[in-house]
Length: 443
Image (cartoon, rainbow, N blue to C red; front, side, top):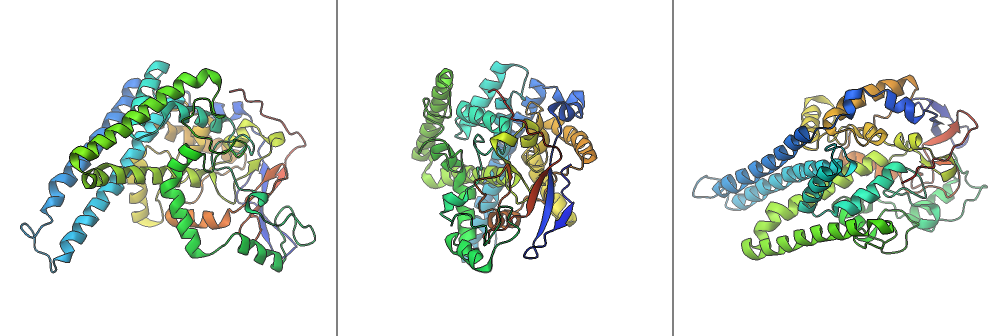
């Protein structure tokens, strides 16, 4: 099966590629590996985490507003007057960073409500989800619907809803020339590789710039204009038009409700600015909101994008293959005690959404407080099949690596992997059997 560590060396152009054996596991195989208690949902227990998130945010805000003003010559002595402003800026920066993580925790709770994982009651799920997501400017029902499609068709090239890869044609690259390259990406002539780098405008500075734009502005851009969304939708598809292509006619009312929720949020933000001043609202709410958007893209981008992760044509897609085309990663983890402490803080604040993502895709109704046990059991079963889905820790350097290694995919092939700025892919797919089954998932 799909062994991440199985390597084969190509004889052309000295390229090393990993062999990816397309998984043949079934939904029953995956679900039966998860302990029964992991599927139990508790409104009370979920609510404790929700209250805990609001308490943590309130405590952090109180601490910042109470103690940061003491960074002043009247209370402390610093070597130079400029240091007072710098220290206050750093302190508020630390607050916005931490509050953004906690906002991400709120998002996770609302996200679970949208999946039906918060409670056994659909009404309770929708009330909690609408209130929590509206608090952070998310159109709850609209995103719930598009996100459900993403789960049903993860890595389905013509049906997935997010992080859909750019193709050779999207970039305006030269058509596939079999005399200079091959479809698998094992061999690319040096002159063609230079053309790729030129068209893709590869440089470290540009990579950092566009990665920054994607991380901090990608989330609102996705909601407003379908950035990195499904390419089959018409231009300016968004999450606010009730008659848009993302939604079915019977979902019209839900989208209107979501729009009202976001509208109330926006009006409340305007009134807060008018009452407290822009600077106060910017540092206490708007900057944490941008940080939360950063964390959302940061996490999901690295879960779904990697040179080692497959993307499927409709004829080779199945639900299990889609669910297993993603990585678990340790959020801000790394070697040594510092990496473990950073990961513990970030994973706790975000309810382990980065660390237990594969189990979440196998069954999205598993609440986060059971996801760790589900992950452990599922990993054990997958390892028996030779499937290893633990990616590198999710860090900024890892995001930079992925951004440079994942540039485009080909427009043909049953299973496709990203190619880098030189047109080379890291993996090549083989089928364990000749059977190719279409999903037929009904939404």
